[in-house]
Every structure is written in structure tokens, then in C-alpha cells.
Image 1 (cartoon, helix red, strand yellow):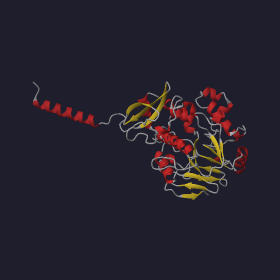
Image 2 (cartoon, one colour):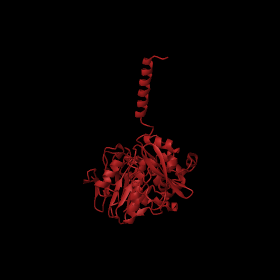
Image 3 (spheres, rainbow, N blue to C red):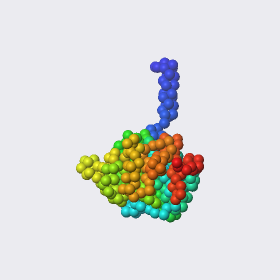
Image 4 (spheres, helix red, strand yellow):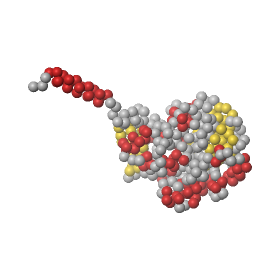
Length: 365
């Protein structure tokens, strides 16, 4: 017979181990992500992560999707278009007679900063509904990577896009280099949360935004470059090599969609135009505007080629929105990616303004 002292010791150790196990959070606890919508035999299936658990529901027209607290508050089932044929690249790349233009560059998963700016400057209300009337909102790419609310930002953009169209306005999302990186499975900069999502859903991040997904098809319908009131908007810029191709904006958009997105690296390398568009000299990677050797003559040549008044870019970060060459080149990436600061650019017929987090607007010098 075992001694009573040994039994008491064993029992105490067992209770301590059981208590410790009960207090250890389950893998994925506290992680919320989604929804991700997948077309499966003409049906939209929603899958999302709620406190680490994978949930699923069939999405039906006119039916709200109860995701639970903390999961994609920006998602609105009423804004879902069940006709997947709606996702086509628009042939229109130039817009005129727009009274107000607002610009956000490189939000990088920082929904809090983006939301604060949109609220402070009356682009949307507290319920995340469009309040900018017939104005145009431009997002200069790079929603992906760094921050942990990438999916939420995409759903917010999509919702505002739908509502803006009904109000006579528009939301323009443009491709950035990080959108291209993620779809090419370059995941160096993703937040660790998305690694859990990939493991739980059994899909890579490119597959979660693949051609069989709602956000994936929406993303593939978006342009690289547009013009509003003679002002050109692009994520990174235009190299001399690209300008010498004498491509229209519509041609750049079509070539990027048809010859770069979802293409094999070998096929891109064998295609001179695709290779240029996806390289450091392409519109989503170029940083030459801010190089020491770039000068006013280069700027004038670019504007002449584009037939533009000025160019607005993101991609290259500054502490605040910055104007160069007499406000002919505007760097709109105000370091939102840090999650600590950020600005919006506002363009009216008479003014260029920096919109701050507190709602103040100051003239861009």
C-alpha cells in the first residue's frame, strides 16, 4: 500500500497541472478574421475565424450574416453582388468635372487610422455609411501587409464603393505593389494573424484572395492608374521606360490585368511589357520621382507624356503629405502603416489640402 503522503502529493500535482492547462489559452484564442467569401457551384459560402474557431455559412441575398462580436464590423451583406459577372475591369480610366477628390495612400491594414480619417473629414458616418455625396475617394493601393485588419479595410472600401455609386460619387481602389506581392505569394510582411487564418482555413493567402473568391474577383477588376480632372493617380509613379511605351492609361490597366496578375514568373519574364509593368520601373514599384537625379525637366517630360496637370502617388513614405516641383508631384503616403499617424489629401478646383486626424485641413505647400 502506498503511503498517504505520496497520494496527497500526487493529487496536488494533478490538480495544479489541470488548473494550469485550463488557464492556457487555446491556439488561436482572440483571433478574429473574415469573412472570406468563396464561390462554390454558383453559391457564395462565407467562412470566418471567430475567437480562433472556423465558422461557415451559406450567404443568401437579402440575408444578413451574423458574424459575432469583433469580426469584420465593416462587412455589409447588403453590398454583396451575387452576379459574379459584375467584376470586370472598367474601360473608363478618366473622369471629369469632379467637385471634390479625397485621397488615402497605403493604409496597410491600419483600419483604426483610416476610419478616423474618414470620420473626421465626413467621408462616412459612425455607421460607416458614405457621406461624401458626389465626391470621389481614391485609395492608392497597399491595403495588404503589416497591419492586422487588411480584410476589414477591403470590406469597408467595397461597402463605400457601392454606396458612393448610389449617391453620384465614386470610390477608386488602385493596385499597389503589396497587392501584387501577396497574390504572388510573397508573404514577408503579413501580420502573424493571417498565418493562423491560412492554417485554420487550409488555404494560402493568395488562395484566400483567389479568382474563386469575392474579394479576389473584386480586386482583379481594379485599375492601376486613373485620371480625375486632369490629375493622374497611381501607386508609385512613371519611369521614362514606361512613358516611352506611349501607352494610354486604359492600355496600362488592361495589360496589367491580362499579362501580370496571376501569370507565372517565367511567362512575365518572357513578355517585355509584362516584365516592365511588374518591375521596379513599373507603376506599382517605381521610386524615381524621389531620387536625387530626378529633376524638373524629368517632371515636365512626364506631365507632357501623360497630358496631366499633376501626379499623385503613394508607395514612398513621408511623415506628412508632401508636394514637390511646385505641387506637380504629390506624395500622399503619410505613413499610415505605422498605426500612429496619417493624413488624407483633398483636392478641390481651387485648393490642395492636407487633412489631419483631428479633422483639420491645411493648405498643401
